[in-house]
Amino acid sequence: MSQSTPPTIGVFDSGFGGLTVLRALIHRLPRARYAFLGDTARLPYGSKSRRTIARYAAQSARFLVNEQGAEFLVIACNTASALALDAIQEAVSVPVLGVIEPGAHAARAASRTGDVLVIATDATVQSHAYAAACRALGLQGIEKACPLLVPLVEEGWNLPPTTTRSFGANAGLTPPQAAQVAVTAEVIRIYLAELTAEAAAQGLNPDTLVLGCTHYPLLRPLIEAAVPPGMKVIDSAEAAAEAAVQSFNGRASGREEPNRGRRPPAAQAASALRQVAELALPQVAASALPQVAASAPPQVAELAPPQVEIRCFATDSVEKFERLGSRFLERPVGIVELVDLGG
Image (tube, rainbow, N blue to C red; front, side, top):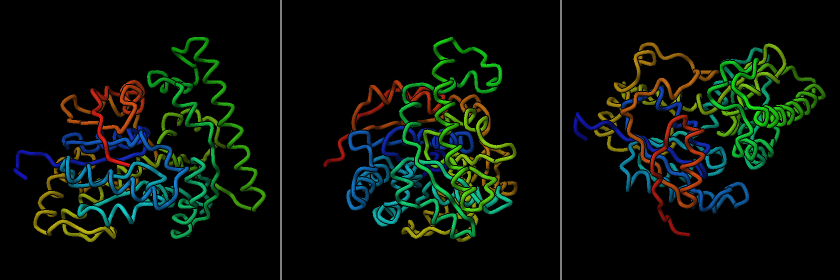
């Protein structure tokens, strides 16, 4: 890698919800290059066996590393992070980061009671990956599947980005939009009421809520309006991006970071990681990195420089990806390239 060539960060998801993770990465590392792959031909991963998910995820990881030159991988898919992280780490020789452990670490930093709520898709909840990650950190995690939230986001029944700063007044919403948002807000209220009631029945006192799906950041203003006063909301996409920057800086400086995957040759890895660390915005420099962030910065896309280089790939439905992807990324995704990863 030449000194003038920025390193490439690969981001993988089974769909396009992981663009919220990419958005958070761009905010922190705006001068890196990005390759995003959505395995849209084979979603949802949640209905597949662990073995099949591992095979699909490993194929996607190899595409990003071997064909797109990714020197780091962020697995922006909760299901793949829960069920296939080991397989991905074995498949490629670059550092790999999932979204679940960073979310749990952010919850530990935020929680005072040690009791944490998690909302996610059914597949992620069935894996109990968040509960296990919380338990490993001394937390008690209560998970709940919220299957209606993903389709509501994909239908656009959430607050448009231009209204999120003035949600209280519903500024800029047309009557149909206001009605759609009201439906989504009520669904969120019901899910959270059921979850908090379950926690109370177990004698728990939760003070932190983890958003365990990459679609959910688009619902954050509605979720924050529905949680009990004082409850902190953890965006796992933001937490993963912050953990990635900390990992890059830690590896570049020679500090050991937990990663069970194989590493590139030491000299090559150190050089590449040092370049990533140097690309970070001043406010996330190695000397001033905060703990994993518990809240998302407003309007991330507005902070990203226009020259950021992003290539997006999908295994199917590129038109849908192009149409909906900009809502998740909060900037145009450009032309999405169709790729075939096999069966």
